[in-house]
Length: 256
View (tube, rainbow, N blue to C red):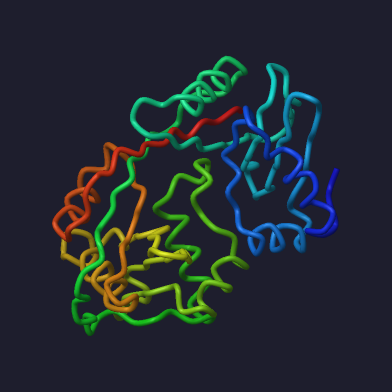
């Protein structure tokens, strides 16, 4: 089914918030409403689970509520899901094994890093807020650097909404956007969602400048970021700027 409004979707979600159910569905109401307005959200449900499938050009992103051994199993284009857990795993680690036994395979592992609240650095001169006119170039830059099947790259509408809230920072040179940092809203912390530097500008310290720009813009609030556990360059940059691993990991799974 394709719910037409959040009012139609919300009872399905709240009905699954029961002890024993396992979920990776933590989207905000605003995110759900954006997917619903674009007609991109499909819901599959049976007694053993509820699946939320967000359609993209070459894949579907899956969030789930598991309550039994036989949730609905979708067919069609590739499906991507990400499952986060603390070291040791517990129920979420078991969910990883369940989906692997259902035909999903591991595509990527991430780790989470945190930086405590601190005095904000001055904003680098090379970093500035991005606006709606920058969105096409921002989408091109993101698609050039992120695996299109991991579910990382946001929709164009999502980026426009972020730019309108001042959550996109960029660096520019004579060839256009040379770097981009995308922030997410958090109640008590800043979330770095995407950080990318154009290939010909890597190794010049631009990633660090973008992170400093984000810290300056957010007043040095506590910050979190997820990055590939084998992405050594990114880990070095974050750790140099005071981020530390906090024991949370995630696994990105794909079914093709």
